[in-house]
Length: 465
Ligand SMILES: [Zn+2]
Image (cartoon, rainbow, N blue to C red; front, side, top):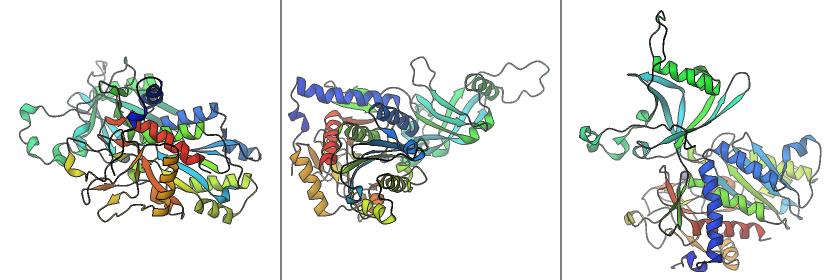
């Protein structure tokens, strides 16, 4: 089943401009929001502007909810749930869009700062699945927060502004790489060697100062104290993420693609967010769920395995006057969801890893993965045929370009998503998202047409009462 390229629907002129304008909004969002915390800040502010109210305020004030209300709830600054309350009792099910907003990167260790041969470095522990050799000799930025004992939170964002310095991990010169080049790919650059170089000027110590050790490190600490008002110990309670530095860019002569950091999974999170923002309230309640920690197994309070979403549904039901455990269970079971996560795009440079009838192609629209997983579909949420038919019908009736895919050839590898976790509530859920080239590399690529089709698909999915 060959699927048409979505670009055919968008001839040059007004029609194509709509796709390009949507993509430009996304490109700017992607450039400015590189961590889950930064994404939540943006989504929360935009939701407020669009009339969404803070659910926690409504709970605190003992207010109630009614059809047509729009609410959101922030989960520890790293996750966000949004709801548009429908006219029907949510016990009959909610239409859910779920995407994740964490991306592969390097995190600073708790004791990161050290000096070696008059150079100051930061030690990291990588987050998510990365090919370590891709993360060297690149301009890198530092994003995150430092939580101090007095309760203040210092925000760190260095390396993005053109006038900012950048940082990086060095690699061995080719002239001396005889041994390195013989190593297997996983060992060419090893995890423990991902140390970020951050300075080389020693602190000007007084003549009578006895302690003349680690003066470069001390100079860095002086700068951190002056500029950000935190000390070395405060690194213990910091979350600082090392990401590629710089903006996402249009890619290709025809500007049909975007290269940027974190398409996985912000190229699904952004159109999901836009879809719930743009959709009118209907019969069913709509939800958009933006979660953290997918790249490390959806664990912890801000990952999909947390009870945050279920608890929030319980709060909403209670505010609508349906306060029972059974109501919550029914609402979960009767829901239908799109787990919006990216898919691997067919790469003409590496055709051997895919089976060409069952893989995703750039520009052919939103990708549905009935299952992901590895080996014998292990770890996948295998959506039922009936549900695939339901979703297929929605997309076809709304003129959405879409395609089906598997993550690579059988036994080539595999991957996970948040789909199975929603599936555990006995609800229908399927993976659907945007195809990505260079997935998990510092700079990933997507097609603008696919991004726009994802937006159309997500909106159509919500509206289908
Ligand atoms: Zn991923």
